[in-house]
Image: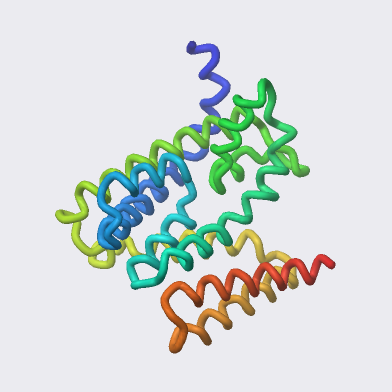
Length: 222
């Protein structure tokens, strides 16, 4: 067993600092999900089966601000579209039976994907799995703490946890705007969201911004 786990340790060590932020972000999600009326079981099941922090927070935020379920689902789906190219990029690194590859692919979240990258578009399977398992444990554990201890912890804003979501989004964004086309899509999406906030129902601004950004990027590639 030790010999099989040893190759995973470099990825686990590398992602450990990020896992702390993931844990706190998950606590925020747990509190937000509970305040949105999701109960205590649904957020935990959501985290275990979906394991997509930004999409889960977006869905819970839409529900918490009286947005409809359809807007929450659309927001989550749009945010998770980035996993299509991520999945294609890590596919060559995964090996073994299809079931094993499918399970390992579920660990290809942003942090693990970045840790697994070894240059020239190549990814290391062991680093991906090692980092992904740590992030998964941090996310599910943090969700549980937020759901169970939400009443004690109180408002995430009072603890400063509310800044984690935009901070992580900005950190992800910075890595994607190295080209003028991507920067233009990001600016256009933000502008559309700001324009929609005063009049659009809850959840619509983030959906509109995501659609505009995706259309901008797609148009640029064409």
